[in-house]
Image (cartoon, rainbow, N blue to C red):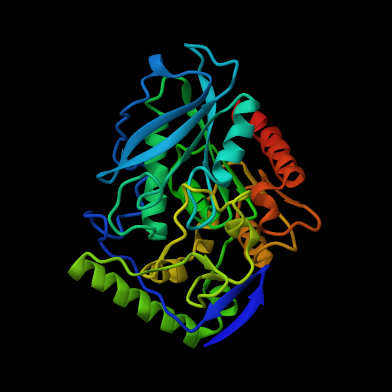
Length: 350
């Protein structure tokens, strides 16, 4: 087993991955040509009960209940129709981590902002827990749009998406496929293709080995219902996808909060390593903002993706000397990202 340091964390090479399965009790790999998923069903968020600040909400996605927090400005009053932003975070994360921080800041700037737990994560449903499925997460975002269109406090024709790190790939896919999303923002986007995957994860043979192990773990779940997991981050377990000193996820003052389960379903390697959002770039037509740093994760992937977007209504802002984890919670970096986002949204969500 080999290891190497990259992007401020130690990645372990020599495990495996796989392709998607039906692990939610619904059809795997649903069609991605539709611009709209099944209608979401609000459970606890009737407009009459919404209040300024944080509102706990639930909605349906492909047969599972998702739990979220809908942040509204302190000035919100019944009858307001607000522009809205769906905020999604890094892989393996929950709504109370970096999505909460960005959603709070956006609400302070006059937006309705939704942060939610994807299926199998946090408080949301799903039996294969902590399963990083790009296919499922893309559908969850589409269903979050459907949900927001049922909320009286939201203008259903002014919904944007902000994806941080890994979920930038999911949000770009939604922007390419679902015309209900009117603007796209990515923050420290992790956008990989097969070449980048091979570079990051130790070469083609190592990637194939992870895929094989992921497929085996998925098959085991299908047969037994048992979820094979490893720590999401660890200083001692080399099977962890974030092995070594990773302060954001190991520091209780940062991302290591009590609500977060430090677990990674081994089956995740399959979809994660075979997910390639870059071909979607050519289908993006909405106003787009990328915010990144050369010192953060795989800037070449973001650069390639951005260059392939055909629209001229796009902007790439490079921040100097920011690590990937700075974008998650460091005040100056988050403040700058929010300021850029608000400026863009004020023109694109008129």
